[in-house]
Length: 291
Image 1 (cartoon, rainbow, N blue to C red):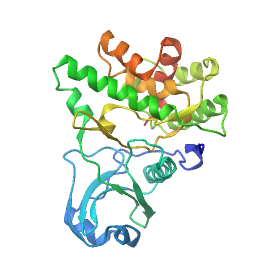
Image 2 (tube, rainbow, N blue to C red; image 1 turned 60 degrees about the vertical axis):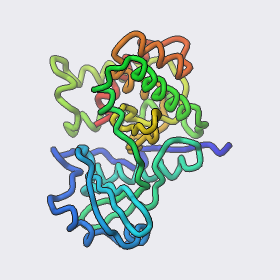
Image 3 (tube, rainbow, N blue to C red; image 1 turned 135 degrees about the horizontal axis):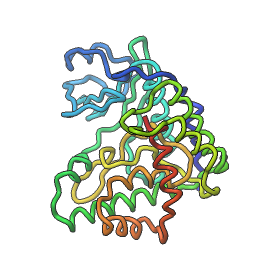
Image 4 (cartoon, rainbow, N blue to C red; image 1 turned 45 degrees about the vertical axis):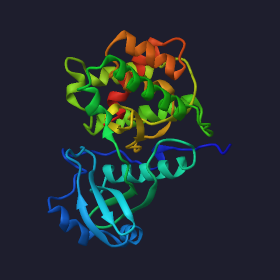
């Protein structure tokens, strides 16, 4: 099996993120067509219509392009950190092609004076985050939880090479320090506590070395699509890296609301015993890295 080598730190350079950075300048959706670089239109061919999701994210602007060659998803971000993230996502998606994962196909990544562009396949489905907030059927909710666990276990089983556990952690701590320095963290995550003190404790008291695997880096329901009673696609791979599996587990754990859901997730993931200390460590670290 070909092994995977992904290093986010070699692509993304942290610097200050201004509020709203990453969103495209205001313009009519149809007007966007005339500004697309050739690297994008060479893939899509003639575009017949442009639409957008009902809700945009904070990091990039997403458009759906209907063209003579099919339907595509286009992410656009202004130059800087968010633009770097699109490049990181493109590299990750290309690296993961053919690995049996539920991911979009990445076609092109380019930039011009306006910003950065990432073109990928259009993936059908309803955001799982939307469904989880409204579903009342306990059995269906457990099925969704089990799906999230199974898909994550498949990702974490992919063989990686080229990094020791300590090197991976140091890379994440480096991102954390720089995000704190540039005030990129969310103040609401640190109400009543000093983030500088939290980061110092994370640096001085790491858990024991563990497994290194491929991590999604932002594994939460809003980044998954649900179709025909299963997860159809996992989106937003800009935070993909090599690291401890508990980093992803810590992020998704927040969305498991009952003990029954947590136990079901563990069974489907294949986790016999939960290391709560390690989980807590990466819950705190993710507040600094996942911005």
